[in-house]
Amino acid sequence: YVQKEGLYSYQYCVNLVNRLYRNRDIKVLVAEDSSVTRSFITELLRRHQFQVVEAADGQKALKAILADPEIDILLTDYNMPVMNGFELIHALRHQHEKVDLVVIGLSSAEDKYLSAKFIKNGANDFLYKPFSHEEFFCRIMHAVDGMERKKELLSMAYRDTLTGIHNRRYFVQQSRKMIAQAQSGNTPLTFAIMDIDFFKSINDSYGHDVGDLVLIAFAKILQESLGRFLIARTGGEEFCVLFPGLAAEKAARLLDAVRKQVEESFVETPEGEISFTFSSGLSQLPADNLEVLMKEADIQLYNAKDNGRNCVCF
Ligand code: GH3
Ligand code: MG
Ligand code: MG
Ligand code: MG
Ligand code: MG
Image 1 (cartoon, protein in one colour):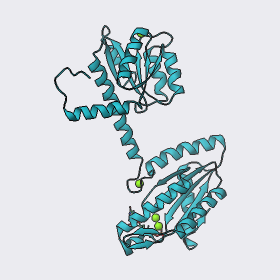
Image 2: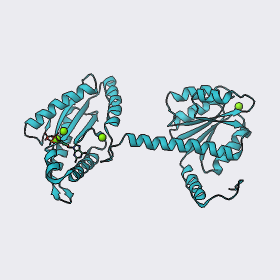
Image 3: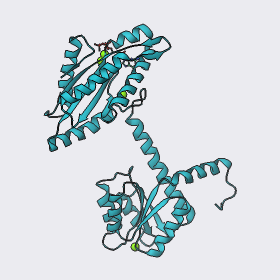
Image 4: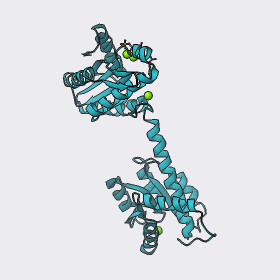
C-alpha cells in the first residue's frame, strides 16, 4: 500500500493488516452492466482481499443474493438492463435488512440527486463515479465496520451475560415465529419452563456468587443436553425450552433425563460441591399464542412444586 499523506503509524498498519485478513471472509457482489467498470471494481476489491462475485444486471444480482446467503455486501450500479439498481434494492430489502446486507450504490456524478435517491431506496451508502481508490476503500471499510458492530451488538442484546445462553428477548422473538410455523403446518410443539428448587436457600447458605455458579452450571447442562432446541434463561433461576416437532410426552421424557442428570451432578464451588434440583412444567399446542403456552406451563410448574419438587409435570 502506497500511502499518499505521509507515513502511517504502526497501529494503523496493524489495524489495516487485521482488516485485510478479516476481509477474506467477506463476500461482495458487484452488480454493474459495464464489463470494464465491473472488472475494475472487482480488481480493487480483490486487492483488498475480498471474495468477489459479479452480476451484469439487477435480476442476475437478485438471483445471486437470494441463492447465496454468504454475500455480505452489494455494490450496485443504477442504470442496468432488465432491473435497475433501485428495483434491485427494493426487491432485496424484503428479505435482507441493512445489518445482513450492506448495499452501496454507485452513482455517476452527472446526476446529483442519485446518491440521495439510493439512500432513500434502502442503500446504506453511495459512491460517486469516478472515485479514487482511497475513497472506495474508506467507504467500504466504513460500511463493513458498521455492519460488524451492529451484528456484535445484536448478539449481545440476545444473550444472557451471566450464562452466555440466549435471553428472554431472543426466546420470545424466536418462539413466536416457531409457534406460528407449527400452527400453520399443524405440527406438534411443546413449551417447557424450568425453575431451580429452593434456589433462594442456596444463595442464603453459600452466597450469591455460589448461586451464580449454580446458574452457570445449569445453563451448561441445558445447552449440552437440549442445545438443539430453543433454550433461554428467561428470568433469575427460570429457564425455558421450546420443542418444535415434539408432543408434550416426548419432550417430558427428554426433560426427565435432564432432571436425573442434574439430580446426580455436583457443582464445584469455593464452598465445596453443591447439588441442586429443578422442577418443570410443560404445555403444548393447540394454544392461541406464546402467552397462553407460558400460562399453562406455569400452572404445571406450580403442580410440580406442590408435588414435592424435582419433577416434570404436564
Ligand atoms: P422454589 O423451589 O419454590 O422455586 O423456591 P426458590 O427459593 O427457588 O424461589 P424464590 O423465587 O423464592 O427465589 C428465587 C431466588 O433467585 C431469589 C433471587 O434472589 C434469586 N436470584 C434471581 N436472580 C439471580 C441471579 O442472577 N443470581 C443469583 N445468585 N440469584 C438470583
Ligand atoms: Mg450501468
Ligand atoms: Mg436474561
Ligand atoms: Mg422462580
Ligand atoms: Mg426456584
